[in-house]
Image (cartoon, rainbow, N blue to C red; front, side, top):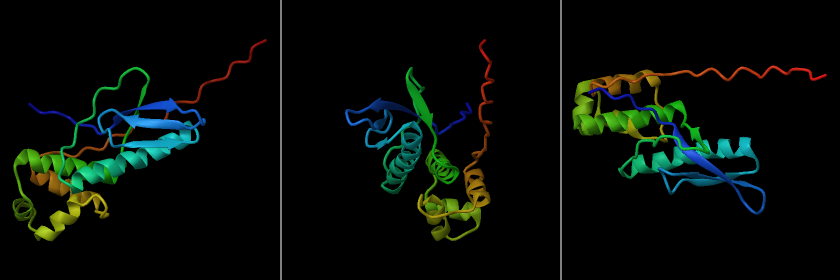
Length: 156
């Protein structure tokens, strides 16, 4: 059975006594941050999420898939680079391939595979796509347009 995975994790924003907003990720308890307001909290949440995922990838720790969003939670997604590297990490594990075997399928040196899997190394998206395909997975990009601005109705 084919399963499509997305990497938008649910987060809860909580007001603190000092007026900042605390952000918690239910699936990643170590990911905790705060922001001065909602916009700042979401910017910090994205960075925090990326670092928590990067840490798990580098330490070869389990990476939980995102839970369904519960009432009162907002979804936070990592940037494209981390999401693609996370997809490759999970695809490689699911395919049961070590770095040497994946490098052989890609026709490259094992050092390149290590760089592709390194969340702090900038990689070309086409190369990440090729690596995911070498595991027999598929990397897809999705776009959600911003919500349309609400029309203001004059009240008389």
